[in-house]
Image (cartoon, rainbow, N blue to C red; front, side):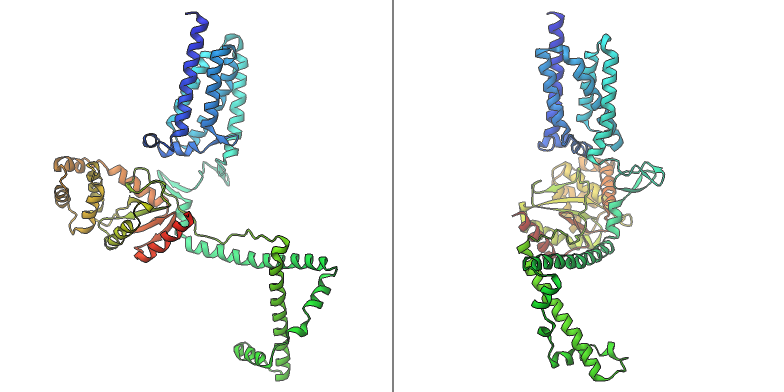
Length: 475
């Protein structure tokens, strides 16, 4: 085989290998076996775009170009390898900054390095280096800008802040989401007050603009239009209405010292003006559709809470319309009392909902952590949910009792006890606790229903009301 053909074949193999990695990266969110290999870091990096298209898509396009070059004109390889190396270096930099090591990104970077090494030409070395450096500079500037990354890199001269992180104490992280949940009700009240003030001002502006348009259409000045169509005499209150207003406002009028006739005159003027303003407002709102009125101001809603549930046991389809995440502790009395309601909700909605269980054993409960480990050890033998039922409904949770429950379910007690003794699931449960805390959950039981937090054990009717509402939204 000639040297030229050998290089072309090698280049073709490199291109096909890169294409396979790019396609696998694009399919990772849709194929179950790839999801198990892909960590949450992979999902973070999968969301990065370049020129508003997924990075894996551009990777696939590039590797098709490499394979085509191998077949038709391998002399172009140095000029496409150098820019690719520059962009890949920028992506690796972004990945490191995000703290999200993605196996597909690493594999692709390795193949790009191989391509670059294969395509280096001594005569073109400086041109290739300059081209690669140019694309590194472009990539490191554009990719964070397009994806809105690292927006909070410095606050009052203190660098290193991360998106969504309020503070760090050693390895411990306090997230903004956690703070939002802790002050959630007060924050929502403040947002509602801001919304009320904006709505009042918006209403005034809408009425003003609509009346201006209507009076202009009638060929009149706004003041003339209002005077002719809404004369004050048209809104004169009855004597009974004046009496009622005085009676209803006795506390406010207690200090009034003037003659009764003057008071009645003032109240009459006030009621006339009030009726007139209400009539004008109603008229203006009725004209809104005529002039294409559309209101986009949104009513404040509780913030949706996100939590990392990677590795947590789940029941129901991944694409269910409603996802319920339960944070619970096997020794917590309230959790035990709520368990019957939880089972009723699962039975009632079946495959319409996805149920995810997050361990949150409290430190003050002596046996809770080991019970959580025991449920996962039973899960190793395919009976997590059956074991959970026993852990929630039986009185004792000491180690001997935990082993006895495994025996009742027909599990291998030797395997089960070995799993407990080796603390096989200790790290997973600690991770579950940390993820729950970062999301703002600080007590058990707590439930996230499609991102909305419910603290304590809701009654079945409350679960039903929320789930039914979300199911109707899906329809």
